[in-house]
Image: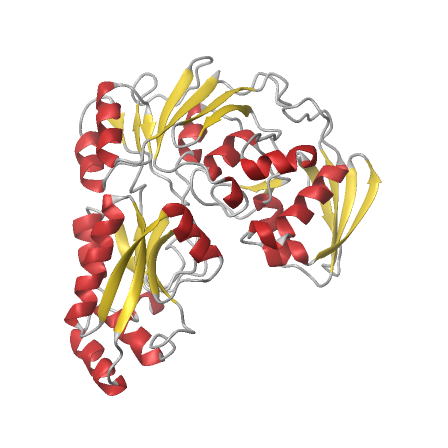
Length: 431
């Protein structure tokens, strides 16, 4: 059984971190960024000071708008809404994979690994004033497991086969088999207000238990968050609110930062990020322990990608070093494996498996024979992503691999990713 340690606070600093969470996918090959490649913040107080100040509103520029149908997929700006307006049952520490109390104060995992008993925090309210209780846990996990929402841990949620409600604040989850990643699920699933689920699906209402509540969403324009006065942590949050503007154009975001219209942006190109961070009054926000990986994915069931030799040729053709130096401006390192260097799963030897070797790539393609043109999807409207896709196209052409670039609107790109519907290759971020 755990004992609840001191709970982390919601400060300006954590708000900055929450605003730049990226999407997820399965990494085949790519590059990892050591610092946020798309985030830039203007100092909100004395330079170098991390002491919180009460009051005020944060003005943010977001690269993407909310897609309500993707609420449980951890993609696009929905992660900002979840991070500020919703909470999960547990939360991992930033520096270690150790679950910490959040809406669950403590828990007991059965010795056979097939159930877990949770004691829930009392005195927690949803933004509509309703009390948070055990039935909300059951409803949230069941909703997350529904196929229509495409949650990334949906198979784990579906393995929770039984719910035993002991009282309003105690619940036992029973599993069809031992779940080694149960705390991943408890950390990921946002606790929702089941009474407003229909409104959540359409974006009419986002009702959680978090420190800030969504008071207005104007599609493709803005998201307004206001302080939740009945939040269960006394005197939190520090901010009075967050005013987020949807700013898909990177140059417009840069201009808004420079003019002081916004305090933070997650849509600034790496060169502009580098230049701006050298100026007084601005700083790049690092996300240690949460690297963003850029990767090329492949539909291994589609021809010619169902041939291992073709996928190996692609891996040998990619010039990861160029991507790190020219696009990331040195803020990263080449990877062959889907784990960052700080992960216990990282293996330096395996990470050197594929380096750019055009002779090997061409030899593999010659052995396969004619492969035709491979479709290659990438998400718009980011100019940085388009530049990366063009570099990959050029790399592959050097090895005799012809790809057709297919710019794809963000919502459609996410739908294809979650539904495993890409016809060939695709480019994406993995966090």
